[in-house]
Figure 1 (tube, rainbow, N blue to C red):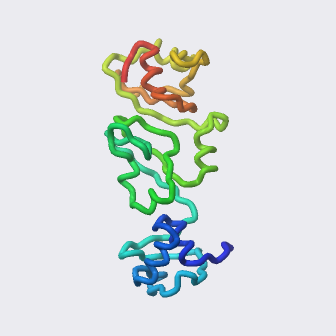
Figure 2: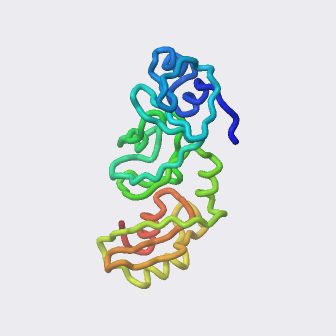
Figure 3: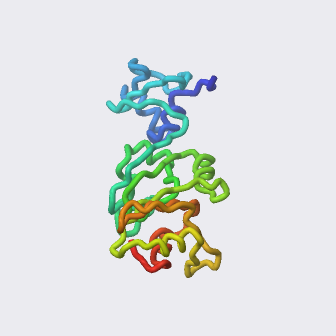
Length: 202
């Protein structure tokens, strides 16, 4: 059973601000715990099944956050963006404050499922090539996809920044111009560059 924590520490762990700010929220009567107005930021509480309401926002306590996110186009998977808004801007502010990171990255113009978490060990397990966890990309190309290109992807292609070949662990042709490709690495623009290396484009 989890050790009881002070309300101030609970609010801080959930991303509601600094400890001082979290205490001020309680003193300003802006925090409810399981439906009851909180009065003491130092009150020690069990986190099991804990429901908070902070400034009118309902919030269920989770020690770690794991978010399944459908990334839209024209968003960057980064906290420090260059030309496009961040995917984190689409999440409730407390999630951003607690240091969420994408499990891998999708290019700004790529759409699809991505995991977001603040569990560093989980992120490492999911992204290290040693675990051989596949990531499936559905690719649409302007040119026809040939069996020769698929064989080349499966047998390995060499990209211009690394002499070590990278491979598709699986390929399924879904149409003349559509391919589902599974990879276990995460090199920069890897899918686009692999397709270019076999004479096609994404």
